[in-house]
Length: 326
Image (tube, rainbow, N blue to C red; front, side, top):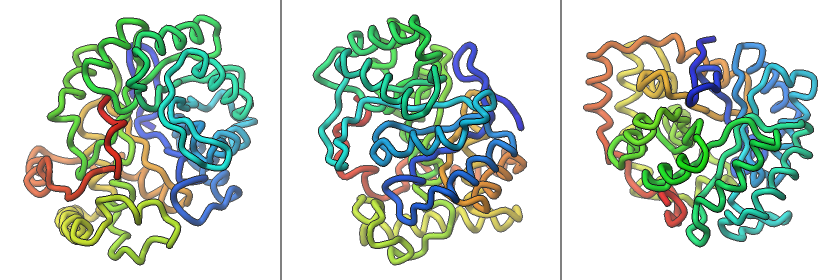
């Protein structure tokens, strides 16, 4: 598989695997199936696995650790701290205090069953704690050998600069897809490229919507988190479905799926971009990986831009947007 670089040194596969949905937020959890999917991803050349302490909560890191127990050298493990959750799943807010950073890292190492984390993200920025304090603690973890590289998620340009001044950032993770094009206009993409930071788009398939497999809200299980998010609500859903239909039409012309076209578009944005589509199923994993073989001409890219301009998706990304772009 093609390799790409995050920051100055960290080399990973051009596409990673998001593991969140294997344990949380989406329905139909099946750990054995998920482990088989992770193994298949590694066999096909994916090296970057993305998890976080809150997924489950806590159980997704354990799952990933079990899956890679005998293949540690094949994997770049990315995990996160900063969104605080109780064991019962309750949300406790964003926490960037240095003592919390240290305890989270130790707990993640234990759950993953490893002696170091390859890429450790600040999942959300704590507005109550100066980012310099949080990143001072993170720099100590790097110096101690517990973490190799650092990242930050959903951070504003000024926050990225301040964190990067304390310790080099290898990757910024932010939602980016054909229905979330904010990084192109809010300064985040320009900032990471100026500083030589890699970009890791999460939800590059628009939480599954851009796959073309979700046609009505009833295609989602009753306990699926997406049912309560703004973009899947009533009029927003109808408008977003129309967007997907435009993508699907373009994909059909190229003989690929809507999801493959959407992923190919993200991959075409630069060799510093490593999307992490998530799935629990091998068949969808293989479909996603095949997007690496989809070539988009300048005409294709122009037509896609025309069909899905910035702001064409309807509704906010989250019910509460207060913890993003902080």
